[in-house]
Image 1 (spheres, rainbow, N blue to C red):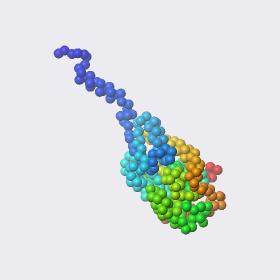
Image 2: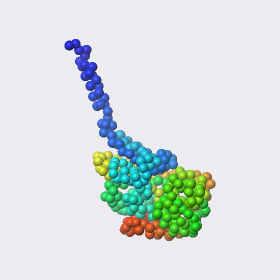
Image 3: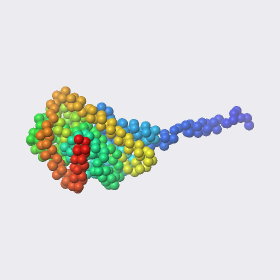
Length: 345
């Protein structure tokens, strides 16, 4: 039998396929893909959570040389807060949850959201990054739900009030109706002499426009995202609460990664947080100026007025929360917040 070369054409095809297969990087062949979902639009400028997610994705994929791929799903594409919490508890997923998501599975985290708890960004960073409260909370969350908390993400600075009438002290709330995110905010508004009604974020603009609500509270970022400056005349920078969300990952999925990959994921979560904090805090003054340029009248309460807000707002929230969780969690959070405030002065 006559042969035209050392190998037959069939053998050449087999060898070529083998060479191409061997040429594919091992990391690409073994790549692990995980979904990451969160609230808000895919805007780097307007949505700090999306900015965080994009940075986290970039850091993980670069550090793992493509062995771990993160697919982003903004705008709650994988479900609402409760649905996404269920998903991250039961399968390989990364979720950025608000307090609305944490509420049903770990209400103890609300102890970190007591009004006027932190006096500065630095104090909040110290508390969330290194306090004994957060160490205990992380362990309890993992034990109870199987979820690992990787980072507390700064989403927009401190929360401010917006309203149809000027607000300089708690007395100015009397008789007004406010949109509340949850029962804790209802309790605070009632302590100020106003009424609070839970209204979904998607309905806030219309509620304010039609008078269903006279005001609401959010960080400047969300006031801009929601175009609330079109239907609210006054902005009160009372630094009510530190605005944050929670980076969560399925614990079993995290444990399935190599020790090196687990470390790089944790490192990326922290580094992305540092960058996001820098971005958020550098933009606050510009965002407030933007709202002022849009016609909002901006007011910053003085020390005496802030003391009045705290004297009424904090106890009402704590009273509500003590009916939801064990008092020891509240006491622990308050003690560590005090240490954080004093530690950065």
